[in-house]
Length: 186
Image 1 (cartoon, rainbow, N blue to C red):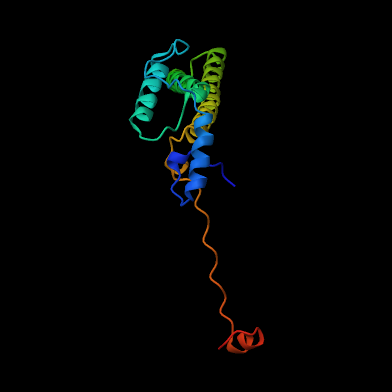
Image 2 (tube, rainbow, N blue to C red):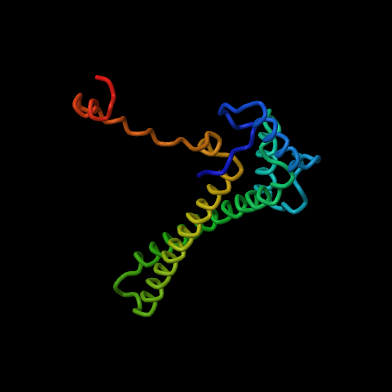
């Protein structure tokens, strides 16, 4: 069963007593001090700071209180991971450029080139290719982690919409004889 959504995102019908009980419980766990748009000093990168401002600004525009000061650690981690992803994307771009440059240098080598130089160029191409592949894997993992964090921070459509159960299969129609046997009227 999925985790319960905050009361402000809950759209199901509840009794007044259940709604009040839930609201009181959530209010008891909500810090009095709210998050501010000003990024905390722990965030040093430009992208991390911009991410903080963007997300907290969006949260403050909402009528619902989705996050609080208790979520600051997760939000800081999300902002730092966004900064790291941008840096990894830049590193990947450099690795691809190095790969193409090494490949071009190897392709320019002609038959008169010393075999040792050709081998070094081939090794450079392989090394640059391996770095690109490793960075791709790390970037994919970082994006996956950021997606999970987005879900925890209610930044994805599905996390805001909640869980939608599958429809029950339609009830199988019984034959008139089976209904008579079961005591149902025909």
